[in-house]
Image (cartoon, rainbow, N blue to C red; front, side):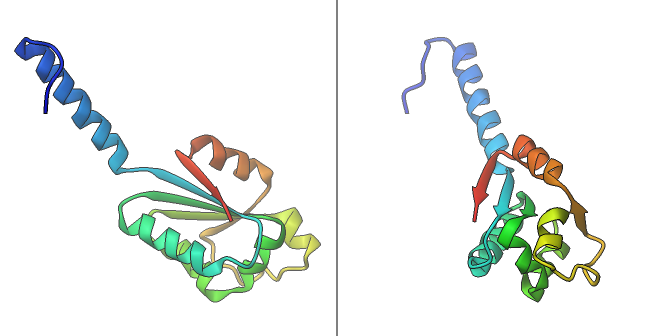
Length: 127
């Protein structure tokens, strides 16, 4: 590997910048916007893989995606380490989703949580 610059200080600076970049890349905040109910297995796989890799995952369910709040496997994701989950109360009410039995880890919210997720996440997937 050819390093830029001829002096040791420049090379050390270059190497430190690379290490810093890799450290930042090691941990990521992934946002998953769930607006449909037909990709449950993909959502579960992505969430568990990201969480197992040490990444933070935020899930926000809205529109048809709130139907997944009645799926046990989807709700269980809220109990995974480094996973936070919320849903749009308006969407859930419109679709008459039973949210009474949801665990406390799942936040009943508004589109504000969606906006916060998009703002705070390094990457956002829409499924």
